Length: 433
Image 1: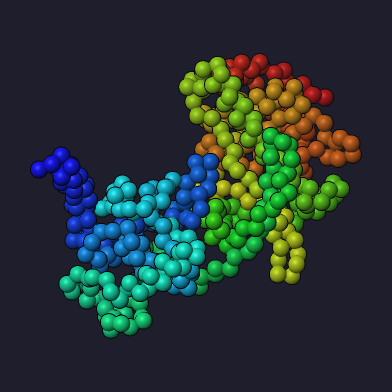
Image 2 (image 1 turned 90 degrees about the horizontal axis):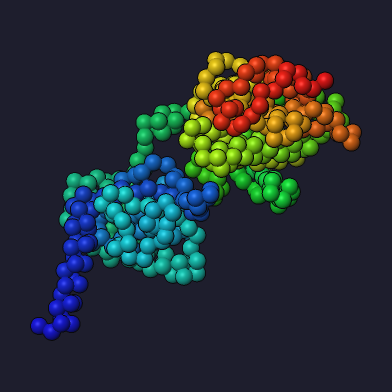
């Protein structure tokens, strides 16, 4: 046997070893385990978001190929979203960060879980769609099994018929019980804008995002109500959000301060970004001094958007949209600067963050109203020594200025270990007058 023939035989045997057993396992089980992903990547990690739990997808082909996997997924998910899937192509990806696969060999674990996303068909994709429809009536199937019989009872078809076999959707018990109530899937359009702290500018190129907002609030604070929401817009789907709306009395207070609600909302976002930046600066200093391990986990504020919600009657409502934070709510420092609750590690770190913000701002302002779940904080307030500048109230209606600063200094009677790690000096009581 020539060297070339020997190499071909070796290559063929290795390919069989690599793919043969995997394909047989799938065909034998007559199903795939599939995780559906979003159409577009999102977040700093540029990952596709998971859309629901993994599902078992019936697989009635004799051979495990990429095209057969796509066909099985289109049939399964298309049984629930028929109209949407007519204009979609199935893209099989190697994982939550891609890339798209062009052959079955590129799938890391086809017998464990397969990741797919559905994207709009291009002109070339439309040809594939037509080819796929024609192929439905010529594909090879397994001998009739108990599973196949059940499928035919649900939606059988004669050979050559244009009717497509439908497969039942896998429902969790929670989904089943949810169907016992009237499902309100009304989506509202919110125009989102972001603030760039690096350039100190607003983007001013709003992105329109659809949200289904719960009717009942998650909770009510001193100034706003929080509502849980979900979205189907690419980049925002697959995770819960919180939409925060102003209370009527808050709007009245804003008007009394000679401000409008849009200005107030912009300041809320800018203030949030300032508090977020203080957290990052604190962590940066700890890293620089190589003492982050001693300090431990640091506090953080998540992404925030300013939103404009327009009703069907044309009324405009200014809101903020933020990440939903799971867990028990705890307040550590009030907006008046008073300490809250037990002297836990997290509260001590909140004190160190407030003290840090006061020192690093040359004692011009302080981050207060620290609350959240664990190390994830939200809804901060800023108290500034100067309340009004150039005829405008600084920050928001919650700025209690020198009162809040002095209350914190009087409560923070002794620096804790976390203040010491940051090299902060014990402040004297009531340094402002």
